[in-house]
Image (cartoon, rainbow, N blue to C red; front, top):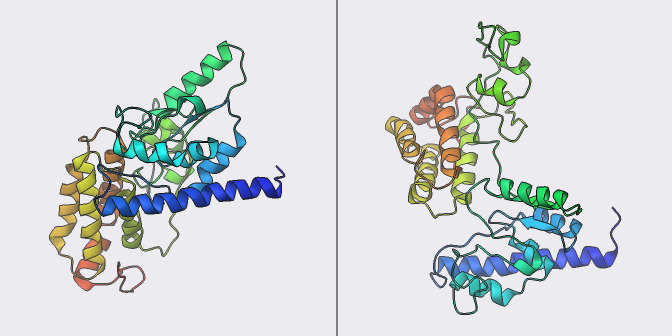
Length: 309
């Protein structure tokens, strides 16, 4: 698709607007000047602004909670944006939604939703309705990611599926890497399909450093609505930082499992479970590496002393 200079500048200006505005909103929230909580899309602006550009005004946008920039691109003004955060008399949804959960009917921008994945059936329903009405409407849904939450598979693991009725029987005795991607095949391997793609860690990658990256991600992405998730992801992130900085104890490893055990199954949406599962999987497969790092203050893989800011 060839874009004119004017179109590129329009997209860029919208990205800059949401970046500057959300940076200020975030600072006000941290200072306690804005009630409730806020979510920002800093660093992710291009994903939803690009999608909004490709859509027509009559198409439908089903956002998660970091895509409000698409509404700005479609014409949502900054004043109602701010009024919604406060739930005041000028709030477009009249205080019937949580902060940051914008809903703009005239722009076909459906209410932002925190629970992971709820947008999918809504968008599918809209697309199906359009088909029945013989319209060519498009419905786009943003619903978070589901790759890093899937339990780990190790290359040396062997498929154990002697039962001929097992969907994995054809690969019995072979490496798990030989099994094709599939909901049933991966379920029987003890993991999940996730987003139909694989995250691969190369030989020599330090699992403790990778684990730290994941915990930073889940801490950052937690919306903060559910206490177990809000506090648990923060706690897990602080514990792994303590280990990386050479101040960890062997008991911290089991503490991580205990913390995420209090998240799993105790949140409104599946994000809490998604934050818990990689912790359990990493410790299951790399417990020796965790114990070594705590005991020696350096990576068992690279021999380096890693530090977390």
